[in-house]
Amino acid sequence: MAGPLHVLSARLQSDTPVSSVALEPYVLCRRADGTTVSAEEVPAEGHTDGRFSVKCRWYRSVVTKGGQYCWVHPEKEAAIQCILCLRCKVDTKKSYHCSTECLKEHWAFHKDFHTQETGDSTFSRVDGFKGSYTYSNSGETWVEVGRERVYTPAADDVGAILKFECTAYDAASPYPEVGKTFSIITARVRPAPCPPRRVLVPMTPAKPSVSKGKFTLLSYNLLADLYATGDQFGYCPPWALAWPYRRLNLLKELLGYDADILCLQEVQSNHFQDFLAPELQKAGYTAIYKKKTTELYTRNAYAIDGCATFFKRDRFALVKKYEVEFNKAALSLADAFPPDQKKAALNRLLKDNVALIAVLEALEPPFAEAAPASGGSTASGGSGTASGSRRQLVCVANTHIHSNPELNDVKLWQVHTLLKGLEKIAASADIPMLVAGDFNTTPGSAAHSMLVRGAVQPNNPELANDPLGILRPASKLQHQLPLASAYAAVAAAPDCDHGSQRQKRRLDGVTGEPKFTNIGREFRGTLDYILFTTDSLVPAAALELPDESECRSKSNTGLPNEAWSSDHVALMAEFRYVQPASAAAATAGAPGTPTGGAQ
Image 1 (cartoon, rainbow, N blue to C red):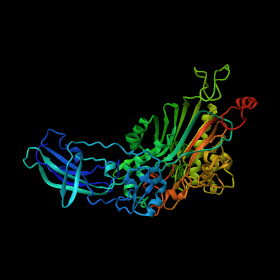
Image 2: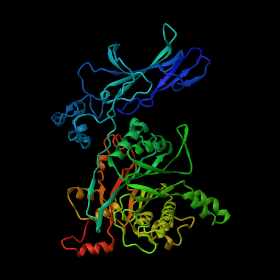
Image 3: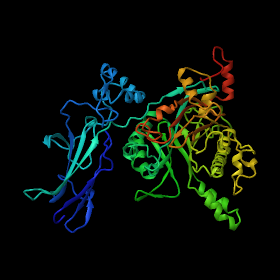
Image 4: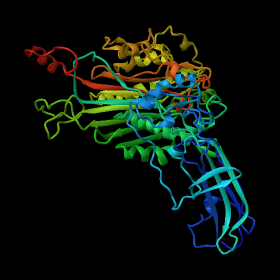
């Protein structure tokens, strides 16, 4: 670079830093020819043989008066300290709260500190330089913690203030710092993201089943960043709504569930490629993805979301993938309309929603190979394996149905279209099926009835909203898949312990579905479901549901917030394979062997 360089401005996306969440200031520079560039396009000090570069420094404030700050609200001074934390030798910083109300409100998360091992589980801190030093400026003491433009606060920074400084640097000058030094001082560093802890609650399987080959499936709408706006979620602090914070919290949450199959919705395409797929691949997952069909322009860029299905590669192998674009079905349907009605039909039906269907092979087949048949095929839709086990396939459908509450006819049509596609797969092989996703329909609605009852009653009031006539006759709104809701199965199961009783209190007394899976400013209800075919699978456990008080707080009237990083809550169930009737009969006749329940 020839000629001088000057720094024009520097700013942070958020002035509230969070431990483990990278801070990446936007620095604007001007070259000698008058052009402006970001610091990303200019060599950093110490990383170039050229004359001009950008010098960056990060500093952490040093608390000199012995003051302590609230672990939850680092901007507030501590007023109380948890004695249990001291007895359990928890990190002292975590024991401080600004008030009794603060400790009480966050007790559900705070109490976990008492059972965790001493030490901090946040990401390891890596210093990019040697020879840290301190200096005093205007009475405030600072310690240098970084010499790169990007800095990731560590556990030691929690409760402290950070300062970023940058200036142009001329290596050939006796006074190398050129022009003005820009400085940014942050709020106090908050603790690293800590998602809620939820456990699987066991239940008694409704049918005889085998534990071999059991697996878990999770469904979760992640809230794509392109929809996570301050206008929509003004009650959520900006730093907790920002994707750099939410992605770490969501990843921790997903890894904590350790599900064998993940059905994720609202997965933004660039975040899938750059973050979720690589990170979950490290954890042993294989990914498939289907994005929606139309991009949206938001925040000065085009973005698009879709459905992503992950499965553990040591548990399953991908046999076949089907991508469902409801727009293609809409175009086909619109061809049947008269020319003067076709445009109106397309305007109503083209909504860009998609579904992703995966046929997986279980790498731990649950059943032994039966006596060879003439064709060599089996009831599970495949042939026997070399080890003598019967090949076991599983079909997993992941979808995100249209959200507009005024277009229930479109929702029902999309659900019906998906189920008819799954029927075709079922006709080709006797294969267990799972259908999961955000259906944007509440329990008791026509679409929900279609899913769990196989049909819609002709007198359902939602059928009156059918301007295109796509739902007539009502008798066609049916399917033959024996689907049931995993959480409704929890409601029907006998109580096992206190945990199952608590779980049932969080289910709707009429439908058996969760009381909510989505909480916003003006809506609280259930939109997400996990469904299974009752003739081949049976749930044996379900992820505990949160109480509404755990999701809301005085400052946050809904989701997302600093603990919950989506406006939806995750659902998960453990499934076992139903024991074939012949095997169940043989087991029933064996002396000393129980005739029901799990085997």
